[in-house]
Length: 71
Image 1 (cartoon, rainbow, N blue to C red):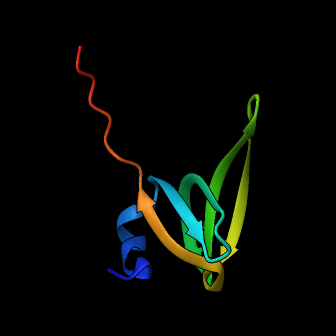
Image 2 (image 1 turned 45 degrees about the horizontal axis):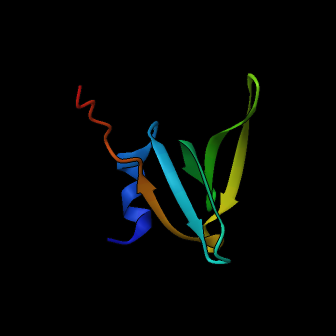
C-alpha cells in the first residue's frame, strides 16, 4: 500500500517514518496537509516539538507494533 493511503488510519497514532535519504524519525502523527506530514516528536526532559516533513522526502510510514505484556 502506498504510504499516502495509510495517513487517514494513522492520524493520532505513534508512527515511524523512513526518509529517502536513509534516515528516519518517530512520533505521533498529528496532521497531514499542504504536502507535509506534521509529527509531534519528543526532544528531551518534558519537551516536545511539532515538526513537519515534505511528502517528497518520505519513503514510507509505519504504525508502531502492538505491545503485549506476557507476565
